[in-house]
Length: 142
Image 1 (tube, one colour):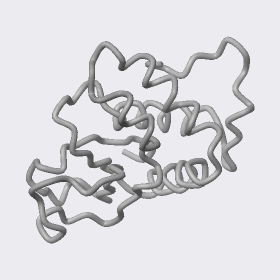
Image 2 (cartoon, helix red, strand yellow):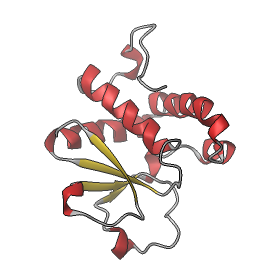
Image 3 (cartoon, helix red, strand yellow):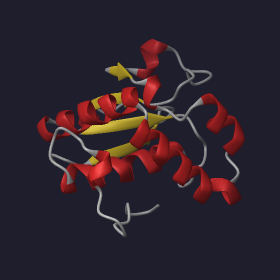
């Protein structure tokens, strides 16, 4: 469905139904070749900064704070904003599957990014104006 974003571990088998397969990790996942991955695009620049990724360390107790910090990066970094707009535009035309390597399917940057994209896909028309969020408005799941 247009405007929806699907999540999938890159280690899960390829399926034609995935639609546009976009890897959103900054670092290439271990143990999988580029041929096996069958990605359409690698958007490593949309991933959390190296400093934030290292701080988080996939520790569940840090996920809430990690989410806030990652959203702040998505809202303030020009390159990430450009990629967000690109993903929103893509999802309006075709199914988009965001691929990630993390083992934890609930507490990872892909979950945060999907929630961010879903919120702005429905609430904000392009061009994206992340500063236009009304005070008190919550980004669902953050």
